[in-house]
Length: 344
Image 1 (spheres, rainbow, N blue to C red):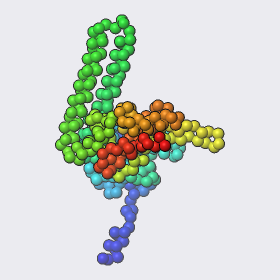
Image 2: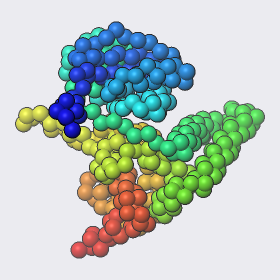
Image 3: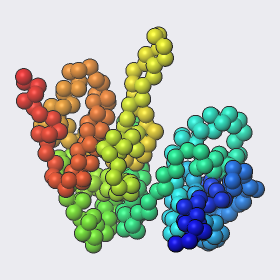
Image 4: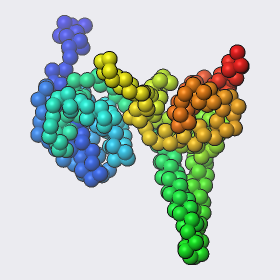
């Protein structure tokens, strides 16, 4: 090996490229930083054709690192397209970029400014590229989130029916229509759940995972689908604490000096779909599993409010599911909470 070849292998690229994308429902704004200086913003449509055009252009820039915010469904297809083109992409929580902008004392807020801030974040902060989930896991999340949306509509429809029944002036035809709306939503939810289960049955890995959460009292197929749709898209190797933080179930303390000591509360700076998927199972589990109920009662006796205790059950259930998936073992409620501990 010659000296020139050795130098070529060990030297870093002379050009450092970082990019930020502000993602909107219809438009994408791209800002590239080259060797610490921002280039002029570029605009693309938020369509598959435009994703491909952007990926083709960025793919020619060796070593470029991309950063974008998690903006619901609007960023996901773009992140997948860029990843498939071999581009490293980091997706961050919008609160992270918002606080980063505060540190930089950026008072203006436009799409171009937001994209430039994301590019600067990729350049200055620790870059952690995301991983591309498989298509079957992406499809499962689509099912789970659609079921979540319909479940919310069903809850609203039931509340509306309750209000209609409360007054004797409501015509019977209106009541029949309100009940029909609920029935139709239930059928649609059941149909989507059946499609999701059919998808799971075609993939042995997904079928193996499904068996574990449904072994917990309070988690039926629909709840398991909702949990799998979110958890299986997380990067592998995360700890149970990272899962909790991702779900927004970690506590947020507020203390300042000697006089300000507010009660800790949930950060809620995470995945609301995962919190929603855990809420009803936690309510059901505390009713049907003696060990989980004992843990819930223990929290109440310790001064927690019922809602705080439910959130603690949600967090502990997430811990349990993490361990079950990691070690491929069924749920053990005696490890969740030992009832003998409260008798001693």
